Length: 175
Ligand code: SF4
Ligand code: SF4
Image (cartoon, rainbow, N blue to C red; front, side):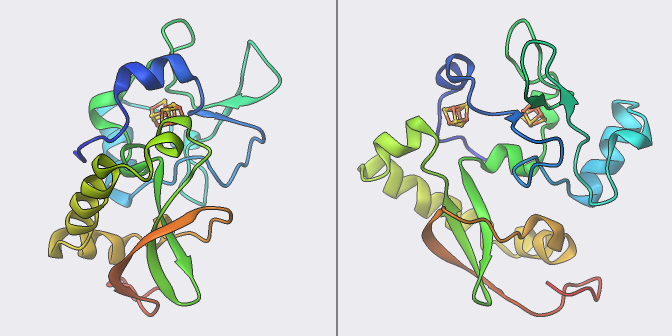
């Protein structure tokens, strides 16, 4: 599990995550191959709940015109699979980003908590922690094996470069 930057209590009140404007939003969590297996095996979710591009199928929000993650609790605003939530959910508001052939750690300043704290010592320390974590051999291998989580987000701020280059993943697929 990745150490969190944003306190859980802040997120529960914010209601900024786990909701998406479109059913096929690029911001919906992309899953690692092992996470797909875990969700199918441990949570018993139907295979049809995971799209061909390895994302969770979002569902219409019963309380609005947008779409929500199927694991978002509608009454308490909590993640129903918090202890095994996907890597991308643990990482946000930080994201792994492919830009001009470089694999970057970026941050989405639409998150109000990180937007306010981004220049703080706390954020600087966290970015060092997160960069070291992502650059560990085990996590770099996981990223190489799961190129689907290295995406080209726009309007996110670069905070560090990871020790991965655009090329070929361990599975032989383009990174
Ligand atoms: S936008 Fe930021 S503060 Fe709001 S729920 Fe998401 S991570 Fe938490
Ligand atoms: S898995 Fe949990 S944290 Fe991730 S989008 Fe769904 S409800 Fe949110």
